Length: 487
Image (cartoon, rainbow, N blue to C red; front, side):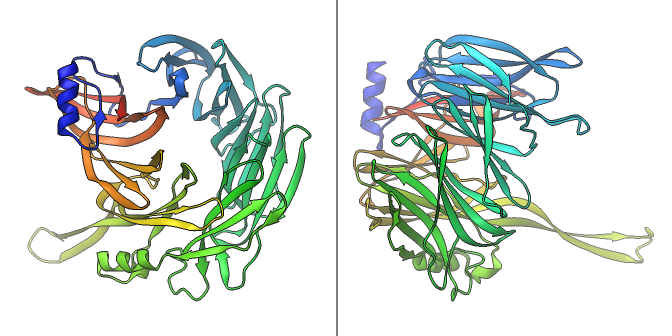
């Protein structure tokens, strides 16, 4: 093994040590083809939890299975927990001492919605299942956690709802400003033991003001602020990074009213420094470079592409705070055919149409700032020919000291590069997602992601449809987790 690792070190830059075939660091669980039956959450050095629905105990009761693995993917324990039939997994989150799993029973519609919360104590790995009474919104999608408090997001067609729940006190409340709004961020501020919330006010896609709330958990007080308005500028999105006890850095995208394509592609990035109750004047940084390269890459009018811009999770290193936007556009396959109504060569008709092929990943723009909101460096990241069926962010960034490691999945590989001060110090390269055997052949991947775990360890997750060489008819569809290390 030592020789194998040394050879790998000599032959590969950047250096990834992934699971070897004689000792794979991989979990592989079979499931029905093209189903998304498994869920997981990585709990730092506490290992990870895999969750899936088990067997029916009765017409009204089914089981859910929770498997706990350590950081070497060794099974520690598993829990089999009865829940109402038709219960759905929604989301999971971790605080310092607990892992939370959110479930809802939404069907049949004539029955009241049940919201269930399973909590696992990371000190002794005991669990508790409770129902959150009077929380019947059937559109819950996401969960955040801080200590014994959780925040729950419900996304409806016209507006969002944000609820806060105390696991110990068993009570919840909703944050609202009396208008239609969308949640821009919900950030646990462990320094001040409070929640920071950003709400974008407006109806449908026409938004104006951004409200910021600070919910103090200890005395249950709410402080309300309004992001400083600026003439001829519309705020589109906002994120928050808590820097220290005095400073929070706000980052987001904006539209310039004079920008012809502002409804399709945001004009740029802005920063605001928030000190206690004071907000600095916004600093604006244009996306002009991104627009020109976007137009050039397609050789087409930008407004004709129906561009979709997504905000990736923020990242921060030593004095560096990074904001990432990713640009997609929908791609269609064009079909054309002829047919004869009568079968005698007369009345031939022509049919043409389009079918949705997926979202084409066009590019990403990385902007990095100092604690005062000044631009340190930026990087344009072209990502052509990467097609995805779901509109979600793909790029992730992790700081190794002053260096920024950038990762994203593509087919059966992980693409990676290393930047320092915006300059490439290790060129773009790829390493394969290993399977349990060198004889495995992967036909396709679905929902592949890579995320930071702990230390210099990362988790690759997703689904694979594969077979063994020489046994093409013996195919299997699996959920997988791979542990990889960066050195």
